[in-house]
Length: 180
Image (tube, rainbow, N blue to C red; front, side, top):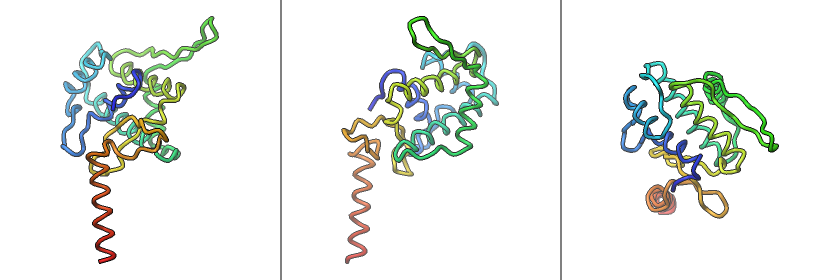
């Protein structure tokens, strides 16, 4: 399920690594540049290996942060450090507007600016109240990011038809083994 507009690129970014299929859209610098271009976050120069490494670190930090939304757990210090580093490299600043609002902007260009834009979108979604519904599938074999549309906001799987059904079947088999 797609997330609300400004949050959707974050969901898609986390899902550039398909754990179950074993594929990574950010396999190399060209893959990162292509993904950023397709997402409208156009880096204005070639992508370095160090920028690719930082992009992958951000992806996993966002996956960890979305996973923490299941139980509102504190983020690990390493995750916070990655998010802070991206914000610093992007030159994120806060300014106020005349209509009593505020605006976050990135001042960096290239990959640092593009990754900073993803962090800005996470902050915007936190403020809008949509961030808490971005979650990661509870199946360790999957870990796909999804937007939880359940009424209570307690969804655990990316899909009840796939991962949810697998978990229920496994639980059923476990109960049969212990009672049989």
